[in-house]
Amino acid sequence: MTYNNKYSLLALCMVAALPLQSLAAVSEAEASRLGQDLTPFGAIKAGNADGSIPAWTGGLTEAVPRESRKLPPRLFTDEKPLFSISADNVDQYADKLFLGTQHMLKSYPGYRIDVYPSHRTAAAPQYIYERTRKNATRTTLTNQTMDMDTYVGGVPFPVPQDGEQAIFNVQWNWRAPDSTVNANTWFVSSSGRRALTAGNILQVTTPYHYPDDRPDPWEGKLWGPTLVTATAPAYSAGEKQLVHANPDQGLITPVNAWAYLTGQRRLRKAPNVQYDVPNSFSSGLTNFDDSWGFNGAIDRYTWELVGREEFYVPYHGNNMTYAKATDLIGEKFANPDLMRWELHRTWVVEANLKPGARHVVPKRRMYIDEDSWTIVGSDLWDAKGQLWKTFQLPPLTFPEVPVSVTVPTIVYNLQAGDYTFMNTLNDGGEVNFDPLPASMFTPQSLERSGVR
Image (cartoon, one colour):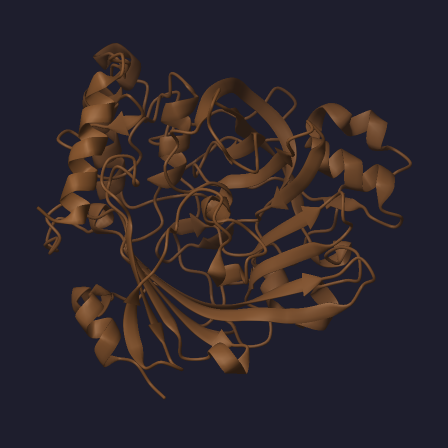
């Protein structure tokens, strides 16, 4: 028996010993609301009372002309901000601002957010809606593990009953079958000094989102094979890492990862790529489970579904990708002139560390866009119970797919006064959704592709 098989057997025994905690799927009557008063993904279809949030009418699905095939199309270029929020009026809008945003408005001189008209552009193909509808009455969670015999792709729990289901919706949301992102990560010190810390090409294939006529070569055994190729700094260019995450996200079956190191010209098994292990893709400035707002196994936290609330959130980041990096990345914060904020309904989910569990982030609160199930912001606390970091994740909209996805991620360290701007497309970045061959996501292919 191999080490991995022993590990899996031990994990299965541990899970079997836990009290059975199962959350059933919703009734047919509840599921029938999807496509009626709820969108196919479970968002409230109607707008809010005063019309500041419009009704969802199907999202943006018609292609918009692009200036560059590498970047998302510009959107709403003729619009001007409705108003701005700064230190002078932050208290007036506090009930609609993340705690981290409130802190920045009060503590960062010159910081503001410009609020624009809200647009609900999130959309997905019809086959993803159909799969989501099936999940609603079939898919269940038991001991923080999703039933993969009934999940068929799309959003697993469009009518969530608790925080665990909501965070699984984030991890399994619609991101297109394949994606390639060529982007850079910058770090800005508390003194205002900018440094390019990493450049990566991130390629992901998601078998559960393949269309019906495309076979899954992994036969449902992998969640999203991921290949990362370093492009900067120069000493690491050409290094690669391949990650095979299983559908249980490492709770039962270990996540497998391999690294090709150019200096050694050999393939190695990579160390743990889970939980609060520093993320090599961001030069260790974030942790692996910070990706996309939260990613990976959920077993170290208890998850509370606080409810659905209206917040001013960073949204429709398309236009800012056309700016120069030096114009976008300021000395203390991202240039407010280039950021777009809108009022949206979000699911609020709070995660608290379980007794006896270990994690450098014992508490986090996530704000999840109801239309796309993407995290658009999050606040993190340290072990002393003090607000530590705040994340801003403005989704990008690609109508021709259609999909709204997380790419740029801004992480403000509120205690140290520095920040990290991950996955910037400015100055030569690229996003595309061209099909990727399954063969490129194997250790053998990784070893053959090595250079230098």
